[in-house]
Length: 271
Image (cartoon, rainbow, N blue to C red; front, top):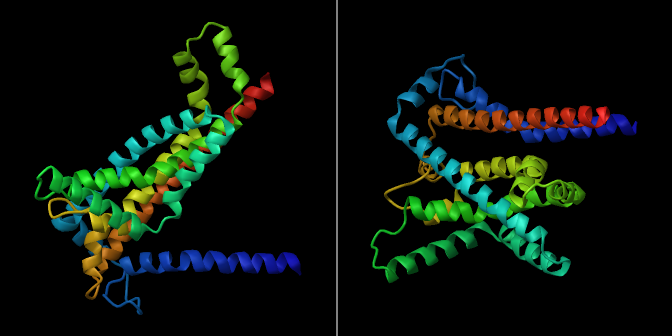
């Protein structure tokens, strides 16, 4: 009875999680604009999406910002995690506590604070239109950093430090030891941090809303204007494509992790 209840409960949870997505995907192929009736199957809304220069331009802006900010956040976050891991325990705990604050801080507070900071700097430097790609980029790197650090730190803690010492004793330089030992060991955490940063940047609205300007804006911010009137199924098609992008990234990451674990198991099995 307990097992049956557990399976039913799990099924209900999955339905609650994925039913809205399935409805969205279904409506993106619906021949009519109705949100309650499925009249037929069509690719019309996808054709309109790819011919809509405004939406495609916004999607390109969002992807450029997501990729650029994720790469920089991953590099800075990985470097920060390496430095934090070498600190004394008390200092490391303090730094990690400070690092966790931005993740628990309400996004609207972060967005307003960053907007005020950028406007202040713009006024000080006498820049009239300071909000744009630069402010969005800095903001996205800022709120992504803690997630990258938290993704890399567990890999650093679980890594066998004697492997680095052995590499140094065998003649490797610190840079070679990092490249051959440390980096491969923490790479799953680095990739996870990058994917998480990319996902958060791709769909961020609250912070982006406050730090975007007239010269450069992202898709989530612009979609907010679409919600003030009946939404076109073209938007459903766009959301479906964004969902597929994230799904493919997660599948690739999971497959890579499985292959990496199999290689490790085979290697240790031979030794």
